[in-house]
Image (cartoon, rainbow, N blue to C red; front, top):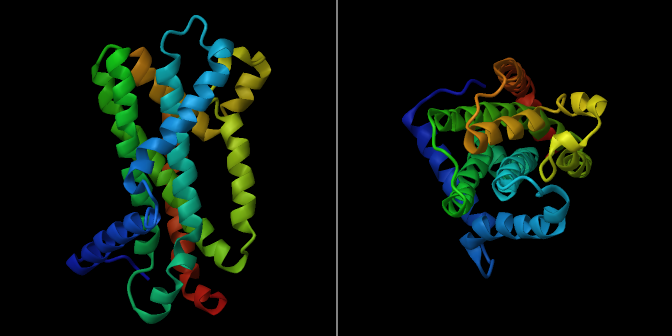
Length: 256
């Protein structure tokens, strides 16, 4: 099923984004405030625990930590919701005819909105410990766009697979925990042995986090070879995931 760009499809996408966002915090005492409180609380815990281990000699440790958490949290939340996107909309999918890709787009865009709101936490910390604002800051949205393509590609694959293999969600939760420690979210890569440093850069999320820190905190132009590598990976993952989704979406109804 091809995704035709029509006004009705745009309206449906907007409605799904709005509905999903409301449902995520429905019945919660603090509601929407959790968008800000959750990353801040995690940041506070990690900052207190690891400050004396990794912050010595790094006056911008807090900024690096919050950026790492924001990027990782977006990836973790978006891919998790992406896995459950079709299952969560099973009743609608079985009753209404519309491009099913919209469901995946809506789930990821919701996490993208959360990332945008969470970025205000970084800006608050930046006000108290400012770094130089350079033209490199303009690259930040580019990195987020490329990362979003990567997440969408993964979600196109996993949303289909999880309909038939429900264990995927549990497996993915474990993989996300591994990724958290393997993405240098709360520690500098320089503390690792040189051989291990090379291996950790095989994780695309590590590259995203490190290069975003470079442009926003250090004011340095990142290694463009690495950026091109993750760009090609993200675009390739998106295209392959989308084609896989289109090929298999008609078969999922029998597993709902």
